[in-house]
Image (cartoon, rainbow, N blue to C red; front, side):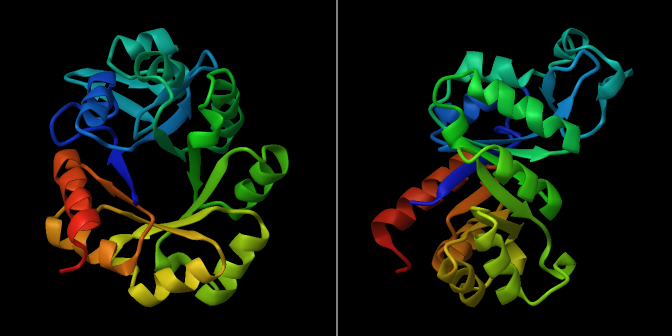
Length: 233
């Protein structure tokens, strides 16, 4: 069954990238969570989409703020996510700055069962190569729009496989059944992001994708469950 990643938590129902959003997504049946990793001024990994956080009129730049200051604005530490929600789910993290990658791995290693369920996403093939050499236990994902891949996709799939990259993550409109089959032929999983409507969920499921990301967790979970029972009919 494909992994159902709750994009920034249950962001259609709660403030995105907050502990309540992640908890709600898991209660709704998501098999995975998705977020974005940055390093705060005190060296802690925190989860937010952008380098600057706004809460009403309050504004903080992540790099120059402590994780405690950010937590007061509902920006959680990665460690707090594991402490609150445990490790019994897949976690997809966009590495928003390369310097966040090693601290993310350190946090995952410190929580039993977390490393083997961690999927690190980045557009940087160089970072993927380094991470695979340093940590064989983590899942690696190349996240890129199809138009930004500057080589034939068959060659790209072969290179990802050779480098030990586990998945290719593209916008759902970039995928076709043929492309999914192509990446599968090289043992690379196909992930689709921004899958919001039921018709789009059913379309990517019909293509055979291995994971999908959505803001609408209950809708995604129900659609995948229905698909697993009824199939394309």
